Image 1: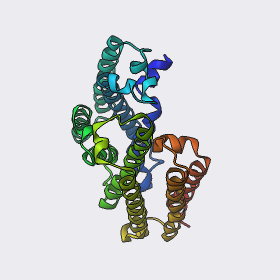
Image 2 (image 1 turned 60 degrees about the horizontal axis):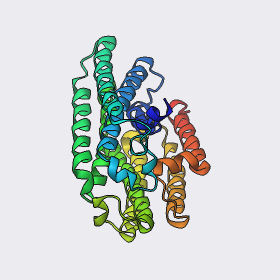
Image 3 (image 1 turned 180 degrees about the vertical axis):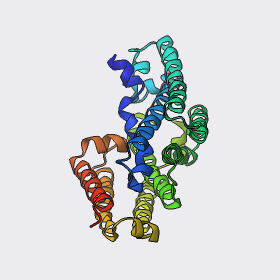
Image 4 (image 1 turned 90 degrees about the vertical axis):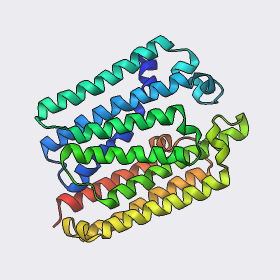
Length: 295
């Protein structure tokens, strides 16, 4: 069971928490019905993403075996057979479709826009798996767009409007994650050799510059978001001070990446780094106080 859970990458489901963003920032996180819809969207996206992960690992078995870290993945190591992986892909897709149908029945709502977003996400990632992940810059942009689709899905399923600032902030934040991952692969490639064609379009210097630019853009976007008239009117003006936590988190991530030369994916760094974890928790608490306790 452990190998199957590893194959569908349950730990990566944390990325799908972005579907809760519209509900969180709208100040309606305590609305039980909307929260239930967001949970539904989270599960559907998680099943779909897992199907993509298995498909990706299935067709990358040979290249993964040459990678210092990926060689331990269930398919590459032989812990899970190809036949079992094929069955798992079908199961994940069926779970996604069943969940989508169940959501329509339970909430008595037509989630056709959510279904379209989900379909676009699935098809886009298939193209990514078979071709586009080999095209430098296009590959990281597709990863970033995937996060934007998660946020839009959360907005459509709850009926909450997603602002332009939210879309832009999500895109550049995801870009930071994608570039950070590529940088780690470049560092590893210096020791073990390049593991993907897209790395031919990158070098460490470019990754460092792109990462710094993306972090700066993310901070500026968040700053503009907190200062926008709509946010200032909807929440307490003190929401602006949450920028402090955002700046610290990005600086800590850059320190881990550029100073300590951590080559792990950004997700793993967040899982392990206590400073970033505490900062995120404090940001959530302070932001919630500004939303739900304005006085």
